[in-house]
Image (cartoon, one colour):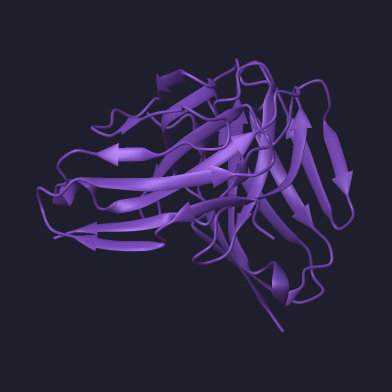
Length: 113
Length: 114
């Protein structure tokens, strides 16, 4: 019953390629986030947005970029993929209401060879 | 420097017994805490939360306890069921709803044996 969708679920790509990870939500949430997680490790916030045309970098430095042109869409782009970018990328959203939990998508597992 | 620590990577319990998952934090500014559950190949799912003005919050089989002086919280699951087998993440934030950037622990893998 996911209301937040991430595509692709799995991606294997060669070094130097440009990739875009898609994230869309149908809940009308203002806030959206990208987290990165390696196996057995914590989730790290890499980007977030509080609304259209608002994007901020998170706590973990990332070479990726994001855009927020529409409320429901928050894509993440890597201009030139490297093996160090291999990880799971999780998109999340939340409403403006105080203390509302984040809703996560099912993630994209990226492997750069 | 980890601000949210889950020191037990895994926990195994028998069906019907209590599961206790622990979480410690170092940032005294954290004022809102959450637990998420994650099944393999899925995103984390929100389970239960607690504000720093409370010391206990209960939702069905799940109870979260907060000890601010010890900077410690725990999640109790009673009774445990095989479907509870998953990775449980503790998370915390500063400023609750207005600044919703969560800091996560590394997770604890709970296995409930039938």
